[in-house]
Image (cartoon, rainbow, N blue to C red):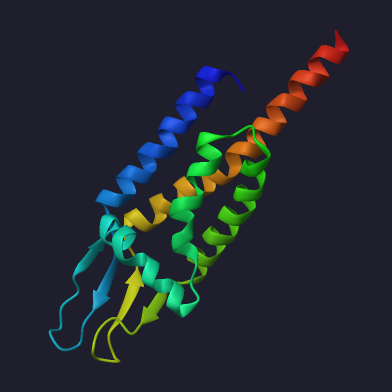
Length: 146
C-alpha cells in the first residue's frame, strides 16, 4: 500500500471517528420525565469508561484504535487489531442497557448514526494492519514473478 494511500486511509478513519463524536449515539428513555434525550458521541467518550464497572470493555477501543493508525507496520498493530476487533464485537453485542439513573426502569437504545460510524471507524482501524500485510505480500509476489 503506497504511502499516499495509507495517509488518505488514516485521515478518512480519523474523520469518521471525529464525525461519530458529533453525531447522536443513543437515546435514553427516562421514565420519570417521559423524555428520550440524545447522547452524542463526545459525551459517550467522556463518560463511557464507567462501563468497565459493568464488565463492558468496548470503550477501550477509543484508546486502542490509535495504535494501528499510528504504527500500521509494527508488530503491536496486529495485537491491537485483535483487541480492537474484540472491542467492536462487544459494542455490537450491546443494543440496550439499563441502570442510567436513580430509577431502575431507565434504559437506553443504540439507535444513533454516530454509533454505526464509530463501529465503522473502529473496524477500519482494525483492518488497516491486515491490509498492510496483504499489500506487502502482493509486492513480494510481484517481484518474484519478474
